Length: 288
Image (cartoon, rainbow, N blue to C red; front, side):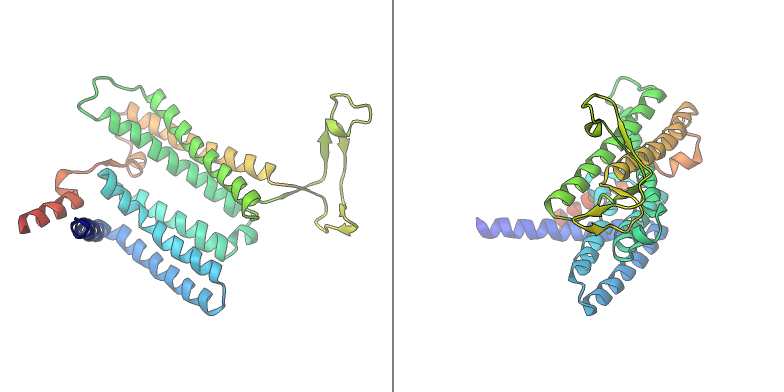
C-alpha cells in the first residue's frame, strides 16, 4: 500500500516535471527571458556564496523558485498567460528580489520601490480583470457583467493584494526584525498628544533639523517616520497602477476585445491541445 502511494506520488511529480518543461518552452520569447534570468540568478548565487553572504544565496534560491510560478500557474489553472504578461512577471521578480534586495537598488534609487509597486498594481489588476473575463466567457454562466463592474473588481483585487503585502511587510519588520517598511525623514510633526492643554488640537513641532535619541544624534536631518508614509505611498501608487489598467480594461470590454494593449496582459482559458499536464497524463495511461 505504502509503495503504491510512493509510486503514485513519483509518477505525479514526473508528469508535472515533464508538463512544466513543455509549458516553459511553449513561447520562445518568454522562454528566452526565463533562461536568461535563471542564468543571471545562478551567477549571483555563486558570487554571494563565495562572498559568504548565505542569506542572499537563500534569496537567490527563492527567486529561482518564483521564476517557475507563471508556468506552474498555467498548468494548475489551465490558463494561457500572454507572453507579454509572463515576461513582465519574470522581470518583476528579478527586479524586486535580485536587483532590489541583493543589488540594493531600493537604497540606490529612491524611485525603485515606487516603480515596482506601481507595476504590481497594474499586473494584479490585469489578473483580477482576467478572472472576471474568464467568468464572463464561461458558457455555463447565464449573466453578463458590465464593463464598469469588471473595472471595479480589477481595482479591488489589485488593492487587496497590495494591502496583504503591506501586512506581510509589517509582520516581517515586527516579528523578524527586518526593515521592509522603509523609513521617511520628515521635518515636521503634528500630534494632539503633544498639545500642552491636552485638547484635541494638533500641536506642531518644526522645522526639525536634528533628532537626538539616547544622547546620540540620528544624523539624518530630521525625524524618522517609521514606515507609515512608505506604506501609504505604496498603496497610493498601487491604486494608480490598477486604475490605469482598469481604464484600459473598461474600453477593452466596451469595444468587445479590440484593444491590443489589454489583450497582451489578460490570461485566457487554455485550448485543449495546449493542456500539457493532461496530455502527459494521457500518454502515461496509454503506456500502462
